[in-house]
Length: 364
Length: 174
Image (cartoon, rainbow over all chains, first blue to last red; front, top):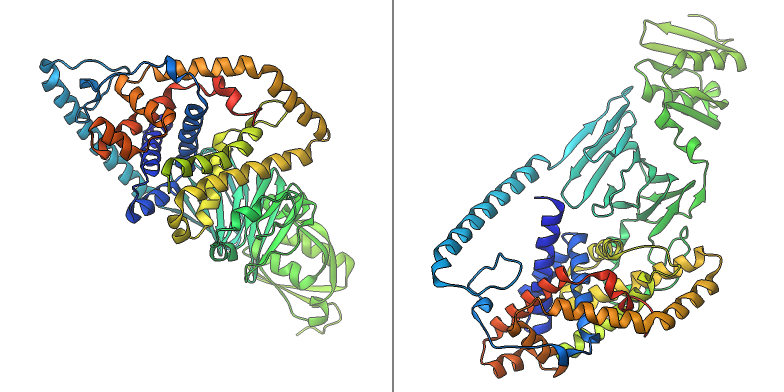
């Protein structure tokens, strides 16, 4: 089923819902179904707005006197499915073929449903799991690119109407292919990042989530919103002007290029701050940037990117400050740099283990 | 409560900010799909029970709010705010007669693709302000079948009406 078929179906359903709303005969189950239908897809919302637009045009139309009317004819018969573009009179002889058409339509619809279910089942979620030292760049079906850091787990769930990525741990830089009819959402620990066509990074840490934008815009929706927004006056409050980067009254945060926000596990978002996004997301390029960090923290980062395990065996050395830009996959150049700025002794145990000690430590 | 009045009120709430926003004069381009996407995301975050209690009001209210916010944001971004507002008003006045005529012609054309009976039903609804139940009674039909006719009519008009030619209804006069 292609996009225009989906739209066609959505607009038929929207007409049905709109007529039902207008009839003022809506039972509770129908209201439930209507809301669920609307919340299924932005396409449904869009078609609903379009039908309302048609209604608005008819309300403003003032040449009804020019419109000729007539009694019910065969073309208005409810039991006949009209496939033609314009109404036709139905001759009795045509009936068998019409039933044939109906049967074919039923078979086709069943097939379409079966295929839809099957593809839904197959695309339920693709999991990408990286190990220590493993970095991956994955191109998704829609052309979006994910740069996945080591020790990261993401689940990709694409449907016809939504692109969803769940960040279960680690960090990822997203380069999202723009498609206004198919929103791209990233969810991490209930924080939702909605993409407006852009490149940005999401990092899931132990106690918070860091979102950094390099290009375009995203909206960050902290977890608390999902439960807090139940009162009817919420939409009214939203009508106040918002600057794109400040948290709105309801906690939704808009970020543009070179901005970052940290969302705490409690769901509260800190103030948006400016960052050099290329520096903040340098890890995606395999670069590690340390600015007033400690050797201990720098070593921990290198260990995530490499199979070689570096250990700092002295607390004073571990707390020593370090600044610089390094290639994440070259721990040896990092160690050479350390040796150039501090008196360090390096003990290698095979290929996989390196221990750092102050140079004045006596040999064993 | 009068169903038709109620729908119209909600619709008016929704329409005027949206039409201002979707107007073409100097306002950044956006279309119903963009608005719909935003409305959709907001609907997902609202409490389902709340939405079910008042399904009509919500959708239109949210849509109206999206449109208001976006046009405000667009104003903030544009350095010559007063200028485009002025252009918008001027365009609305100068072209409205021509645009109105064009729009009416388009609606008339689209209506004529319906069956005479469907036109009859719409006419009763839009000119005599009858409710579905009253129309059913007058025509000796079931409510369900009247509703089906509305359904089919809206669906057909949705496909037929050219949104470009309805320009006058998306900005200008209010």
